[in-house]
Image 1 (cartoon, rainbow, N blue to C red):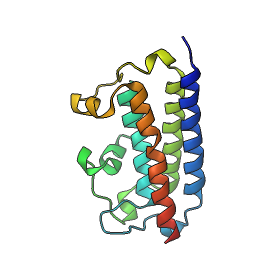
Image 2: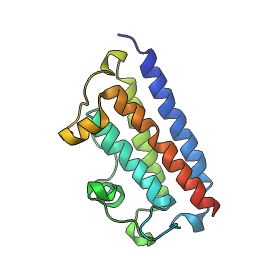
Image 3: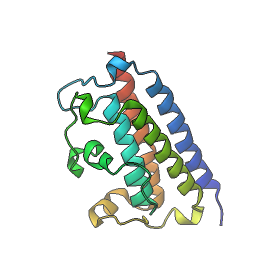
Image 4: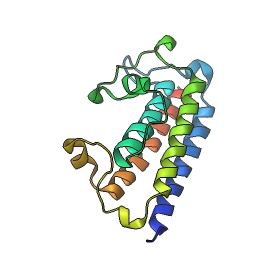
Length: 166
């Protein structure tokens, strides 16, 4: 049971988490709830969304693990297509920045732990969690799903950096 490709995946996820945290830590406090347009995600929402995505999509759907963050994140930070609420600029609608950052750390640590528990032979296999057939067909096999979601943090990291620079 080889682990060469799994080590690459684990390192990609570690580097993505480190890079995102470095970007997020630079976000000015007054920018954390800034939206480029009404209903669009601000840096706080982006970080909560990524916490939720690691916890729910990667850890639970892909890897069959248990949740490690608050259940409220699904309603607050899931995209609308997954029944999440539309982002607002009201701080009272969200957990604190520090709580969201801590949740991101916990979810990412669990993602990396679960990935490191895989072998290369698991990559062509199916997703391990309770995933609808529609979602399974969207994400593909384990390797394809992990590759797709490895790009997700970078996408939102760019959005956070751009919003903070405005």
